[in-house]
Image: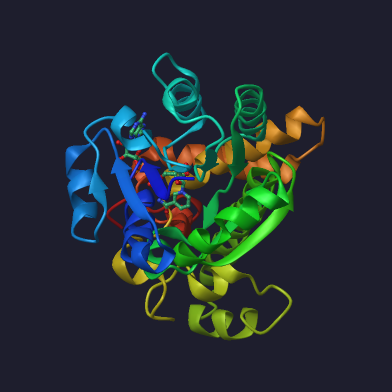
Length: 304
Ligand code: NAD
C-alpha cells in the first residue's frame, strides 16, 4: 500500500486544505503531492512541504488517496472521466475524495463509474469558507462507504474540525446544499428585516440586540449582520468584502433547486432566494460577501 495523497485543485479552498495536510504529512506517515492548472497555486503549497507535480499523471501516479477541490460539476466530470483523466491514470483501488460542491446527481454518477472502474469514492464537500480552510476548522460532509471514510478520516481531521458521515454517495453534497439553502434564504430574510427596520426609523443596533437573542436569530444575522458598526465579524464593516461570495451562494442555491427538481420537491422560497441572488449578481454584486445581498434589497449600489 502506498502512502501518497494527491491533492488536485489547490485554489482558494483546496490550497489551504492541502497545506494543512502537507504540514501534517510526517505525523500521518504520508507524502502529499499537489497539482493544479495554475503553477502559482501549486507553488503556494511547496513551503508547507507538499511535493509539486508537473502533471495530473505525475500527481496521481502511485497515490492511494486522491483529493480533488475544483469549481463545479462539469470540472469534476472532466477531471475524473475525460480521456487522460483520473479514472484512466490513477492506480486501481485508490480512494477518491471529491471535496468540490457539485450537484447530487453528478456526484452519484461519478461515484458509480468510479466503483465500476475499480475505485472507491467519497463526496466530501466542506463548509466554513477560506478562513475555516486556513484554520483547519471546516466541516466535511461525507457521502459513501463508512469503511472508506474511516480510512481517510485521520487526513480529513488535519484539514477540518468536524467530519460527518451523511450516508451513501451523494449525501454529503445533499447535506451541503440543503444547509447552504437555509443560509441563502436567511441572508435575504435578514437583509429585508434590516431594510424595513431602517425605513421605519429603528436603530439597527437595537434590531440586532433584539434579533440575536430572539426567535429571528440566525447564524448569518448574528455573525454577519448587513449593517456596519454592530459586530466585528460583519463583512458590512469592510464594504462586504468576502467571505463567501454572492456568486458562490448563487451557485449553491441553483444546486439546491436542481436537487429539488430531481426529487420533485417544491421549494418556492429557495427558488425566490436563487432569483434574488441572480439579480444581485447581474447588478454587479457577485463578488461581495453573501450578506451584501442587503445592497440589492435596500436599493443601494455597489459604491453606496
Ligand atoms: P478556485 O477557483 O479558487 O479553485 C479551484 C482550483 O481548481 C483552481 O486553482 C483551478 O485552477 C483548479 N482546477 C480546476 N480544474 C482543474 C483540473 N482539471 N486540474 C487541476 N486543477 C484544476 O475555487 P474555490 O473557491 O477553491 O472553490 C472550490 C470548490 O470549493 C467549489 O466547488 C466551491 O463551491 C467550494 N467551496 C468554496 C468555498 C469558498 O469560500 N471559496 C467554501 C466552501 C466550498
